[in-house]
Length: 124
Length: 179
Image (cartoon, rainbow over all chains, first blue to last red; front, side, top):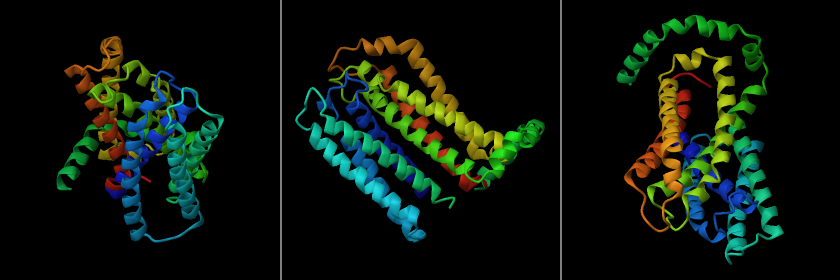
């Protein structure tokens, strides 16, 4: 049940963050940048759900493997980028800055790494 | 668990006709390749999880809009994300078929898989209902006004059924013996 909630949290956090990253990269331009605040609220809900269930899962099986370390680092960078991207968009610019695009690409990459290493922990 | 056990037994009885399909799929070169190549299964699982994140992230905002949230934005703006939901779903359909063809018995004999399939069908019919009968009406909704009951139902059914697809997919490993 805890791992199911962890997967659901992944869907919410990574899903909402990916949606914002895609918007920054030009998908769905009809969505005004200023309207994305709801997405960030959803992300934090997913983040806290996964921080909580993640701690429980780690307590049940406390092994600090290389994969686990990479996962935590990539999550930390991705979560930091949520804050950075939010700030970059906070002024509601009509055009997205090149820097914000770079953050969005790195964010997508970090989620791929975090999801991959998280999943591989079950097999390696 | 007794109830689930009985359900599993009755599902198994109802699907025993699939035995020949199961043994055929297990005999294919593809099944042997997936089962015997160490990296294939973890790779497909990883892609399956990235696909689910894409699907949820793209379809969740639209569902919330149909429920009446963020009504200052047009429904059509949220539908811009739908191709990404289709991409996530397609990725998961392909990787899901890899799992199913490689080890059909661990799914056919698992009540979780049948429940997952049930909710997949519900979610799919719900998408059809929206696309065929409600999409244009949803696009034409005036900004700022609430959404009609039928759209609230479609949005709710979508959120709940995709959530149940995820839950029963995850439960495969715990109610049965799927890996």
